[in-house]
Length: 359
Image (cartoon, rainbow, N blue to C red; front, side, top):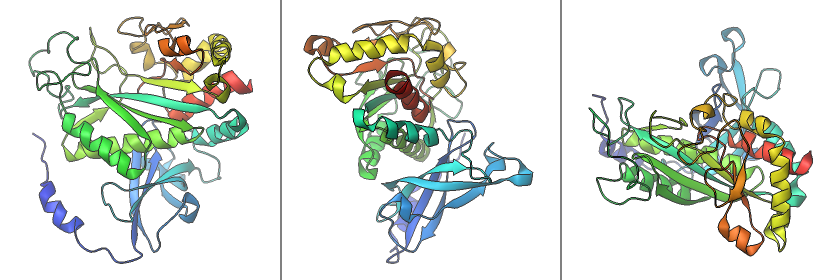
């Protein structure tokens, strides 16, 4: 049984007066796996108002699968700033880009090229909304609340369910939502998902590079909140084999032209372009170039086949879904259902813009 500290004991220390002008800045970055988040803290002698106010820092890349031990220093370049929901006050979360010793972006620094692409496409005002699915696990890596020597009843009553026999871990979900709002993350909803112990939160709509920034910070906050509850969060696209839903990061996308009268024709043009680059997108939609998503995109459990491109109105078994309301209104957005739960949102949003606007 895992040892858990008493969080009530911690509170008396968190309530200690913090000196004026002293700020605890938690620097966050993406590690060498392309899906893990690391962080470390430093004191700033001022209250930062923007990422540019924060100093560049460094870390040991040999301990994060990002460098060799003989040349291990990596650099953290602040790129987005949020309020810290764990320490409160003027303390901050600082999201960072990672750069190597030669000032070139690290291999998992997908933000670097994404920011360039979003700048080129800014006149189109691209909006994104991502539906982040995840699963809660006990310390034994078995889904939270599942019987230890068996399985729960078949899927059906769990999606958006209510009741102790239908949902597990709601405390974590509620705490995460409130913490995201406090931090300044553009979280816009949450719900229980199809598999018991599986949940979803939504971020957006955000414009351009902000989607990646806000989703990564929301993920960090989720892991930290779950840590307080002694629960593990997994973004594995298929945490349980068998007749159980996997986990995705359905990506809603629109441009200014799509959101205006007659925008459905623009949406259909974008879908036609997406149909010609299916393999390219599959490789960009999980950190292992499709290998993780292959376990999820089987054509079953509300997914399309990883091998085929498809699109349809209100079709959750298609690669691209046009919401029924969008089809009726004649304008709106499309939903790309292919990205995996452990995708890098920078990579996802970048390739969508490249395919539909820039190339």
